Length: 134
Length: 252
Image (tube, each protein chain N blue to C red):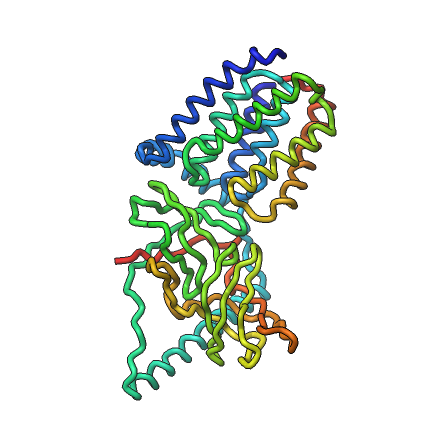
């Protein structure tokens, strides 16, 4: 199942690095963090962020920093509240996408954030239906 | 999960990433990024070419392309006529800088940004103008050792422009997915289908677009007697999403 996650992450990186501005990698990392709740997701965020910086000509480390801080906030939140739920996935993916798209100066922020939330919910549903706990 | 379980791991990665970011800011990692980009660029190219819109053009699209070519030729002929008249009257038109054109393959991109396979090693710099045939595509926004990002003209740009037929002057403003030709006085004439060219103004830093590059064609006009200015929607003659190659003007 870890291989599945890595494949999903690789596809997201390639899509986001070449074809689209939708924050696929952020969504995959968010769902991974919720499903797995393991510190391994920080290492995935680190490497995914660096590769994305290479593909999109950003300052090396900028995307990885964002991903790490975002996941840190998610993990802080789950200390007190249940994060393995649809409302949390919806709100966190929407808010995370808005911050990400604004931080990296993309257009159509709200539209893209809305689409990102839908994708996050679909991915989360898929994980739940398949009862995937990576 | 206890806070102390994930915090050390987060802290390690965060400090490491912060160091990388700082070194990158100071320009100390350019060689390293160039080395890794040699591996990522072919993958980017492969993915982009696999999923990009490279369909064989239909008859209608061929006719449209031919029409656009003819429109550009009309622009060139009108410019030649104008220059002839100026020379005969002993007025010299200002020359366009001779900068060299560097061909670059598109390896990635979205509606507002295009990624090409040329970078600092090929003398590409931020601010270089990017064209395709006689059409203005945009400006280099960021460069690394081997790749660059182009900010296309529809994306949050603003520069002076003029129409070919009536020499009406105004300002092109990129709105994300479209452009408007704005700040045109009501007394000036705009016609649907008219070609819009760059004016050629540069700012105090010498940044700007060369004159007489095709921006697009007027698609619709917004003129109200109660407004100070009129405006027009301008559509580029180029489909940015289907570009496979562009040309970067490298300054001498």
